[in-house]
Every structure is written in C-alpha cells, then in structure tokens.
Image 1 (cartoon, rainbow, N blue to C red):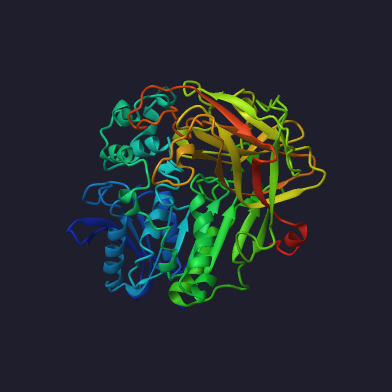
Image 2: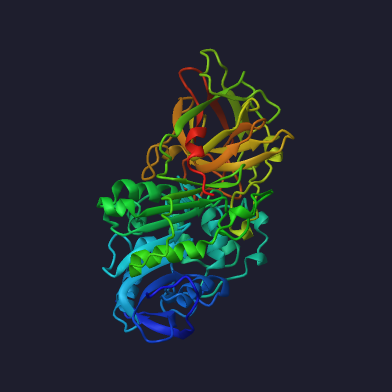
Length: 568
C-alpha cells in the first residue's frame, strides 16, 4: 500500500523549487515527500496567499505523512514566484505546465490530484477541462466560479468586497486590510478611482472596471461551460453560508448531467456543511452555534477520496453517500443520492399584501395560496445615497452569516413578507430563487432578495440572499435598459440552503435594491457604472396579483425522504 490513514512517514522538504513555465517564468514550489525515495501519487495546491502559511500548509503535510507526495506553489507574481500577478489570467496555463513538470519528476508516479480553497479552488477547476493526462482527480473547496457568476461581478453587480480582497493581494505579498477605514469608502465615486482612493494603483482594478459584462475578456478565464470535457472524479465541498458557494451548487449538478461518461458522473461527490468561507473551522456561524456535530474529519474524507482515485487503494469501511448535507435547525448530517435532492417538492410561497409591505411593521405575507386579482402592489423608493446596509465586517472577507436582520427590516425601503407561524416543521434543502414582477421609473437598477428564519421571540436570522441587476435580467453580456412604468419579470438567485424551519417559526422574504457593503450600489442610471458620479432616486413597484405571481421558490423535502437518509 502506498497510502495509509495512519501518519507513518517522516517528511523530506524541498523548499522554493523553481518550476519553469512555457514563457520562461519560474514559479516557487515547496515540495513535501515521504522519506524513502519511492515514486508516489502527488497532490498539488496553487495559491496566491503564500505557500508558507502554516494553516494552509497543514493539510498537505497531513497527506504527505500518510503516503502522498505534495506540492504547494505560489501563483505567478505572488510571494516567491516570478512574473506579474493578475488574478485569473494565467492560472490555466501555469497550472497545466506545473502538472506536466511534476509528472516528470522522479518522486511522482504520474498520478496527480489537486485541491485548494477559494481562489486555490479556482486554480484547481480551471485546469480540469483541458487537463494534462496526469491529473486524475480534484477536490475544489468553495472554489471561485466563473468571474461573472460571483466575483468580481455577481449577476451584473460588482461584488464590493473585491476591493478589500484586491487590496489584500495587491503586489507580491499580502497587505494589511485593517489600515483602511472601509465604511468611509462605501460611497466613493467614481468606482474607477477606488483603487487610488485607498492608496494603490491597480491594473487589475482598472481591467475589472473596463469589463463589467460577460465579454470575451472574461470568457477566456471561465470553466463552467466545459463540464462535458472534465473526465475525472471530483469531490465538491462548500458551506451553506459560504459567499462563494454558488460554484458548488452549479458544478456538482453540472458534472452529474454533463460529464463525458457515466463513470465520471458516478464519481462525483458533494459535501455541504453549515460553514461560512472558513470551511469546517467552527460550528458557530454569526449568532448561531450549530453544534459540535457540524465539524467533520474533512482531511480523512479527502484522503480516502484521493487514495481511491490516485492510488487505486480503498480505505472505506462502507460506501460514502454521494451527497453529504448538513441540515441546519436540527443540526444533523444526511446522505442523499443526488443534488438537487430526488423527490424534493419545488414549492412556491407567493408574495401578498394590501400594498403596505414596507418594513417588518407592514402587511406583507408569504403564502402557498395563489394571489387574488385585486391585490395592490407594494412601492418603495430606492435612494443610492441612503442604501440598505448589509450586516458584515468586510475585513473578514465573509459576506453573509446567521445574523439578526430586524434592524434592516425596520427600513421603509425594505419590503418584508412573512408566513404564518408554521404548524409543523418544514425542511428546505436545495436551490432558492425569487421570481419578481416589478416596474420602475429609471433605466437601470438592482433588486435584492433575502431568505430569513423568524424565531418565536422575533429574531430574524438570515439564511441566504442574492442580487440581480435589472438590465442584465436576460443576459450578462448585453444590458437591456428599462422603460418607465413597464412591468418586467426577473429572477433573483438566492443560491441555496439546507434548513429545518421549526414548528412555530416563520419563513420571511426581504426585497430591497441594495446591500452595502456586500454589493456596490446601483446609481440608477444607464451610464458606465465605473465612471458614474451622479446617483438618482428610483421609484419601484413590486406586483403580486394573479397575473404577476411574485414568489419565493424553494425545494421542500418530505419527511419520508429524510427518514431514510440520516447519517448516524
């Protein structure tokens, strides 16, 4: 046996090995080898965060002590690697060249896997469609998706936190984000000069400002349209509260449906915990502690997956479920055959009111009963100079946790729709969307949605949320500007959740048009958002009559399915 769950190997370290790229640039790579000189399967991680970070290094050392060769590489232009750093642009070619070089070394047996979290996960995915033959399996952990799906743009809206991330990774080493008083720059205009406003001259930021749509510049660094070319096993990992989770919710079903053969489709695995972006570190997310069972031995799970697919060795005592999902609220792990979960009931909760759904003190209701013909629409004013705040600390680089939203819901520019207290538990597990019918008096604007779990004591705990730029409602490539007072339909993607809404709790939906500082505010004009400096107010109308059935849409899981799926 090459691999062993027991850490039996001493480690030989080779630090700052220069791996040549096709253009002559050398990338610094630290290599960890079990002593003994035997050729072994290898696990690679590529990072912009420094390959000497002890916390990040810990996982690769775990694998090395158990029989794998491991390599940890600084991305181009970062830390000890040569070249110029610009996010996304060279990771496909650099990743391929690195795998090719490693596969030819005397410590590698020609079987290579990749893993990594966040941007490292993007580096893992981007090489998969046109992979080197030595790449045999990957475990992307909360990987960044295609850049227009989440970062730096999400559904047409600039992910404001990317200026924080861009500052942190500016130049060769990590910068100190606590130096900036971020709340003071939330309203800075124009966006194009935001980099200089906080003290850096960033070519990357300027490129992002130049490319707000899904154009050819972005398409060159995307991968999610190529699932049909990815012919390797993949273990997909994220958390319900992770602000990059959309990649996992799309990549897993994308691979299950589009992978080039049935064997590869069958070799997809999914793990979703309650976690935020710091995966499997703490059971506490915001204000809620989901219990010690929320944390799992993720390294052991990953080891078994790599042992099987890189070394052909089984360490399983029993088959793992294809999908291992943590249901919050009851705080228990379940195993399912697929995701979305087979047998889930796609359920619509319709928006209702008498025209006064403004704030939690209004008359907004969520109901499974269809709207009537004579329901009055709800109206609110979106003022970019007074945007709806988003509960977060931008320095943490985590946007969206289980936090109380009552202060947000007191605002008149937030429409609040709440169900009656539930008479029995209701389990939502899967994707979450809002279908919204609206009109406005501006040419461009945003709409946000937020799913909330309302406790009997009044606490309103955020579950998941999303945003859609209205002019990109049909395509991220070309804006379709709005006509005054015309009724439109758009879909807001709230991503996903796995939550048991307990008896006595209520389901709530918030609708607004801003969420600062998670997203940059729309200034409600049709000018270039990078250069616009003059915001205007927008008068929005949300319709929910029988001809305009605005609704929250969730996958509700029958109890009989759950009873068979508990992981003890």
